[in-house]
Length: 249
Length: 66
Ligand SMILES: [Zn+2]
Image 1 (tube, rainbow over the protein chains, first blue to last red):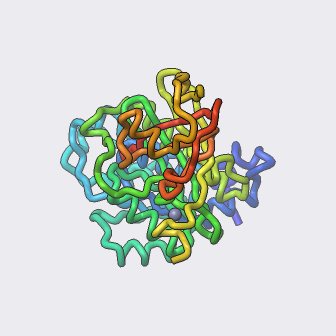
Image 2: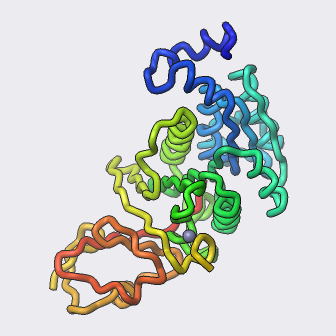
Image 3: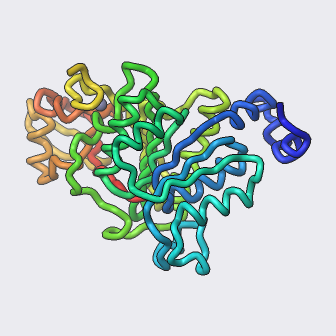
């Protein structure tokens, strides 16, 4: 049951036929793990906290640097040197004291990640490197936990959703089988704040839809965003039967 | 035959597979994804996927930033 404060706080959700009190209660019961609290994790976590996602776990091992502030909107100049997850946790609790926020201020070893996944309904991959992305994907496949992946560089964004509770779901590794760090990241290629913000915001949107029971328009799809033309391209991701992560092996 | 690669029309020999196309275009295999007519082709199928006249090929790179 929602209390009076919650009924008021979430009144704009309650007006929506697709959310209503049932959906809001589902958001309150939801447990999300956000891995990476940079340019994607900032807007994603802010929106999920504001929306009333009841249990949010934040994971990152970085401290805030001045070069983060151009895009990582959870943080301000006073926060430089502090642990990202601690500042973000404080911020989320200020936005919404009705929810529970927990922080994990380290790079999680595989075992701990597996334990966290037992408690999570959904994972947002908001990380900034290929090795973490492959590790998270594998853990989510094994634990059968749905995964929303965001990535951004320069003016480009990528967004995908894999529902690993379904056994025939493809995975991130089907799409990008190489864990070699040939890929571009924000520190070597640059990034425009609103581009990474757009992708992180859409990760939050997809998470809210998932929790309230709305179908995702991007399940097993890869969405490519071009921040210059504002064009989106949509591709179907097929399961690779020979995938070493999700295939029959 | 004519095909389209990222919106550009190019001339390509018949019976070219995806691996050969990437080599022809001098694109790296690692970190690349390839879609034929919006359908992503898994890496393990590149060698046995033959490109047809008029196919729309999309090539893009994995990005890891966030
Ligand atoms: Zn796979």
